[in-house]
Length: 367
Ligand code: PLP
Ligand code: COI
Image (cartoon, rainbow, N blue to C red; front, side):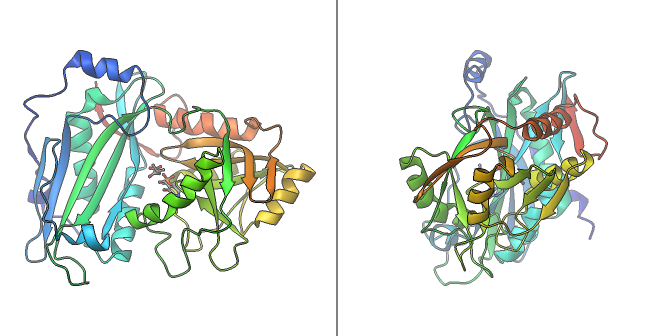
């Protein structure tokens, strides 16, 4: 379906009081994750009678929404996570942005929300990156982009909203984990699960993350960085972390990752790593992998490396795994050779220092 060209014609209203240059550069000195925001945001409205309308990029500001807006009561909300990178040559690029647009619409379908035409999604992201191009950090940092959509109709009955707001905001970020690229420690949740068959695990909806917070709190209280969720039916199979997919590198050069069974998020980093690992001569097997097998393989040395991956976390080596019965380490608890290689390849492609043979990188602008 082609999109009405008028819909892609964003009204651009520059922020009249952007953050002063010196303040922005000072904030860039110590980038964490998701606390600093750019000067603008992209907003598009949807109404059941009008469809998508009024695309605009303007100063980032709070929304005014009715206290009865259905997102506040029934959590009809979805989001995406993607990044803009600045290469050494000043090119500002996105990594596989069409995949985010497609996944956004799969999430929308699952949450009974309207489809956002792919061109509209991409245009909103690109217009925001262009106007806030100076906010894309150099070096290791990147501009994290957060497209999201929520139900804005004031109505307390339980049914899909008749009004939505689609918005994109941007945040210059450094590493997701406080320890930077140091291996992470994981907590295996015995009690809480993230997603059940038939549920919303494969959708990127806010509710999944709300449901993970108590488990994440438990993990933090055990000194862990992230939670590993097991499957809801048998509490046996490894699914994913609260915000990342997982990979296991074996001593026979096979790499195991849990299959896309409908309960885990189909990560774009996951798909890219599968492709790169296969190109590196590793054999990637998407199959159920149990917690017992994980423990046994780590102890026997069959498991050489494990890592988590996602847009925010990039590729994070897993050093130690804690669970209610004790803990175990993977390899020498450091970053494994294949993990390091995959991380360098992925980040190299994203930043333009490694050839993009798969056509994953899309230039938005140059500075
Ligand atoms: N799994 C969950 C639950 C996530 O929130 C994310 C992050 O977006 C991922 C996996 C990784 O997905 P991607 O690689 O597309 O960022
Ligand atoms: C992302 O990686 O983009 C996510 O949405 C995950 C979250 C942990 C920030």
